[in-house]
Image (spheres, rainbow, N blue to C red):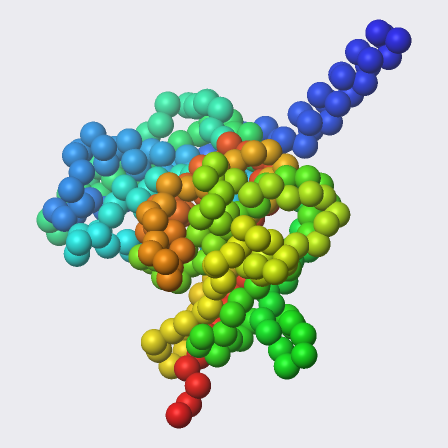
Length: 291
């Protein structure tokens, strides 16, 4: 019996090892340092090498995509955030750098009042395997006689999410409004531990206070001051416990929220640490009814 158990464990380890490929990779990256970047030469060299490693991993394995709204040109108080760009570019690489096979090469030249760094790297990387758990979920709104699936909302209409997972786990739902605003719709504010647990095989209608007392007195409406606006709903599931990101409390009329770039950084970090995590996204359009 012990021998059989040992064989099973060896086979399981072999399958996991095969699933997580290790490959020789190589890549290069060119970074232009301007006066407004606000980083030192040492930081620029390090950043350029790390971005070259990320490029090598992406060329071989691809990248983790958390949202279609990631913007490489982030501004904070009128100044571009170089650190946000490179940290997230590295984080999105769908693999881990295991080590150099050759010492990184770095070329630096000065042109048009700018320093141009070009890094070349060679090494070994391991692919990150993301879970393929099949989630069933739909965005819903009120119809004339019953709720219906929807991706287009008139400003002021209530939104619900119908959800089912194949296994027990934890869920969070966020609404990305723009670069400066991502709202936490689930867990509810009453979930003081920052988690919402679900049971496998059960249907949930989130944001319905009749089904879930925790939703009371909260319900959500999608609103816009523009003629037409695109928002994005992000649903996050994992069989492993995880805590929502560090947001700021909203008032009685608004859910907790945070800066979208901080949300993206948190989500990428979660995905790299939890390979069972599943992230799904759907767009919604919100329009102002013509008067």
